Image (cartoon, rainbow, N blue to C red; front, side):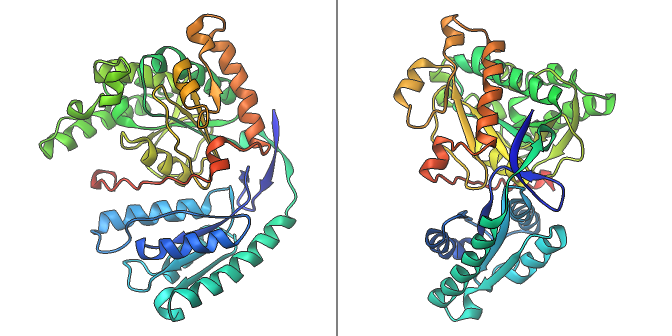
Length: 386
C-alpha cells in the first residue's frame, strides 16, 4: 500500500503540509490565532501555559511544542512569544532548529513593539512559508511512512464489542503492511494490563507495561486519589460500562493483537516500527496531543457517546459503532461502524474497510473535524512522566 505525501528531509512523510503558527505561552496564543487566520495553509494551536511553571511542567511543555514543530505534517514554523515567558521564543526556535531542517522563525511581542507590529511581521513570514510550501509536490510514499495514533473517548458498550475491535483489526492490517500504530491512555489499560502485557515482544516490554500501570496507581494513591473514583466516567456509565476493568478490556482491543515493540513516555518519538504503546493520561485530548507531538501523522478515534474533537496538525478520523450516536452526531462522525452491532458485517470486515478510509485521508481527504477547523490540545502536566 502507498499514499501520496510530502517527503521531509528528516526521513518521514507528511500527509498535510501546514505552516504552524506556534505560541510559546498563553500570552502569544491570540496573536497566533490572528496570524493563522490571515494566511491560507497556516494553522495555529492555543497554548494555555508557558509561564510560572515548575521545571517538570516546563520540560513537558517544551517537549510537546517541539514535537508539534517536528511533526511530519508541518512544513515550517512561525513562533510567537511574549518575551517574559519561562522559555523565550528565541530559545524555543533554537531547540526546534537543532532537531529539524524546516524553516523556523520567531517573534517576541515585547521586542517587536506590541501586538500589531508582531502580527504584521509574523503574517509576512507565514505568507512566505505558505508560498514555498505550495511549491512542494506530493510524492508516492510507502505505507511504512504512516504512524497512526489510536484513541478512544466517550466510550460506551458498543466501543468494546464493535468499534475498538474494528480499529484493532485496522491496526493489525497496517502493521502487517509495514506501518506503525500507537495506542495511549495507560489508565485505561488498568484491569486489562495482564492481557496487554502478553503482547510484549520481549520480557522487558511485558514487565514495562505492568510497571506503567502499577506506577500510575501508586502516583494517584500518593496524592490520596483512587483512579477508580473517576473511571469509568459518568458518560461511560450512562453508556453501559460498569467498572474500570470492563472499560479497559474493551479499550485495549483497539490496539490490535500484534507484538508491542516499544513503550514510550508521552510525547516521545518512536524508535521502532510496529505496534507501539504510549504512557499518557486518561484524557483523550491530552493523549491525542501527546501522540501528535510524538510524530503521528493521523489519528483514528473511536467513540460511543460522540465527540467533535479535532487537531490542527493531524486529521482525526472519528468512528462509532453506535447507530444512534452516528445519527445524532453525523456532523462530527466520519465512519459508521454500526453494521457490526446489527450483525450485517463482522469487525474484521469493517477493519478492512477502515484501511481504505485511512488511505483516503492520507491522500488528502479532509475529516469532518478538519473541515470545521477544530483544534484541541491539552498538555498533561504530571511530574511522574519526567
